[in-house]
Image (cartoon, rainbow, N blue to C red; front, top):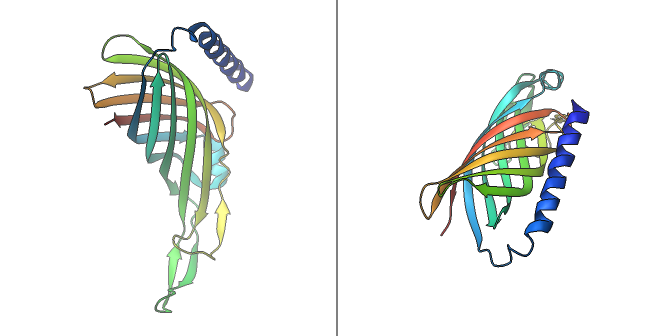
Length: 203
């Protein structure tokens, strides 16, 4: 499966490079369009990796992004915060720095992600476009006590990864559009796939 994913990734990158060379002149006069987005996302992790790390094999996220388009080409840069259920939480005595009161707190999973991708966006009609991007997603996930700077913590072994992102964009009006995207992670590093819906707006 890993070799297959690498082959697909190589083919997509090759197709994008070829299309970029072919379109270089015709896209010179294309108008640049930028938009901001707010997203909701459902992510799936490899079951074995999730079990070893003591977390649920899925999570939900909220995020924001900026996207740009010119001609057939587009890019997106974004960030997400995920809620992932902690299956191996621990407890620790902590002290309030203001009142010196001591109490017990349970751990939770902190999951942050940054991502960047680019590729081709092709209009099928006035209101619908289909795209294929390739990108890289950074994951920072750990088990820790919230708002405690010197408490014990554990790193969750979900590594940063490359991905393929087929997506559809639906134009609602001059200011608002929606994007439905599927992230297929290619490196077998813990994250398997995710589905994201984003509302995009510009002014």
